[in-house]
Image 1 (spheres, helix red, strand yellow):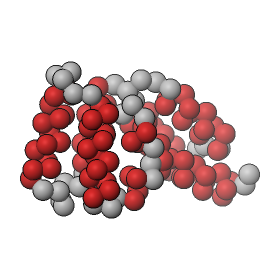
Image 2 (tube, one colour):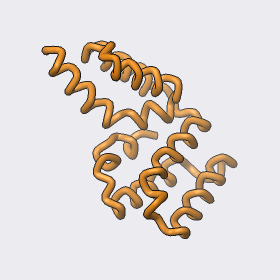
Image 3 (cartoon, helix red, strand yellow):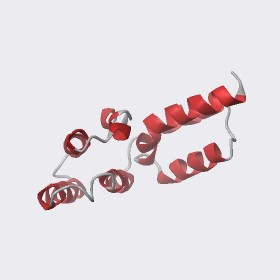
Length: 128
C-alpha cells in the first residue's frame, strides 16, 4: 500500500471506530487522533493499535463522556423530551440501574430520526 492508500484506509477505519475507542479510553482516543493528524501510522500500525484498544472493556466514566459527545450530534435539533429521556438514562446508568445497550439503542433512534449518516456508518452502536 502507498502512503496515500494507507492514510485513506486509516481515515475510513477511524471514522468507524473512533467512538468505540473513546468509550474505552479518552486518552487513547486523543493519542490516536493526534498521531493520525501527524501521519505517524502505517495502516498496519494503526490497525494493531486499534485492535489493542477495542479489546479493552468500556470504562463507565469514558462511556458517559462518549454518550455526551454523541449527544452533540443531536442537541440542537432534539426535543426537550428527548434530552430529558437521554439524561435520565445516563443518570440511571451511573447508578447501575440502566444498561449501556439501552442508551445506545436510544441514541441510534436519534441518529436514524435526525439522519446522522456519520454515526450510523460507525461501529459505535455495535459495541458494548
